[in-house]
Length: 290
Ligand SMILES: Nc1ncnc2c1ncn2[C@@H]1O[C@H](COP(=O)(O)OP(=O)(O)O)[C@@H](O)[C@H]1O
Ligand SMILES: [Mg+2]
Image 1 (cartoon, rainbow, N blue to C red):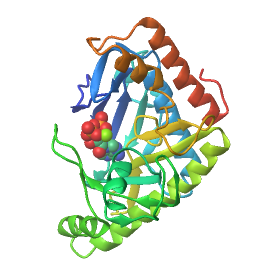
Image 2 (image 1 turned 180 degrees about the vertical axis):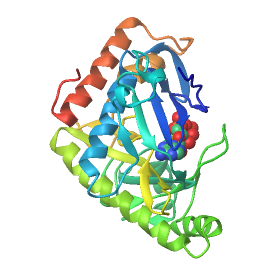
Image 3 (image 1 turned 135 degrees about the vertical axis):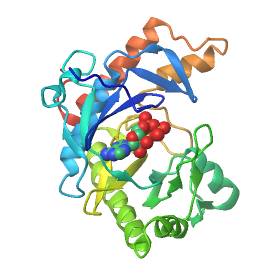
């Protein structure tokens, strides 16, 4: 049997190469306030992988995506076991574009901080008088460039994204930049409207795109999971204050209340968090997990 070792181990995910495909594995690790906690959130990786699968299926007519299969029986033998079953996605390998395609439907986080100071978010002027967590009149596209490990991503203007892509793909920068912007907004609009109808606000999210062998834009990475997005419960939503995170609410609350915590959560907080991931999955897909 061919053995595989990850070509990349991120904070939460592992990536394996397999010829012209990739196998992206979501682990049960969880991060909060930028640190990896010591606990594993049972089945989190599988729930998030199946959530991405749901969205890739849901939007395949809007934008082509990289998903090939989540069935380990269609993957190399090495992956056909419990460790990879459910939490792995085999994908077409793309040449990734070095732009993080962020879209914001609500004003929060760094966007809110910037708006309070300048009235703008990433150079985009917004109406006066917005409140924290308020829905924006239209979703805004605020790209960033991927920073080297350890540094924060850098927000860039749309025009800067054109330049970055033009340098890599002479003559095509503007077309690519426009395509990924339009795709980002279209995907967000369709999915956020759907999620809202199921009780979840998707305040903002990030997509990554790449090029296939024909130079066509394809959606990659994970899609609309709580790790790549801000999910808020619709119940109790009210502008004028920060909103609780759908999935990490118990984790963050406990960490804040226990500052000398050594990054280890009590079992009760873990169980409640597992249940939140299952709840998000059931709300969004209309099916119970497993
Ligand atoms: N279809 C794909 N082809 C090639 N690379 C991909 C594809 N989908 C996602 N990726 C890349 O795989 C990596 C996933 O790693 P991740 O755990 O998110 O860490 P990070 O975001 O810190 O790089 C990212 O670099 C992402 O751009
Ligand atoms: Mg990533």
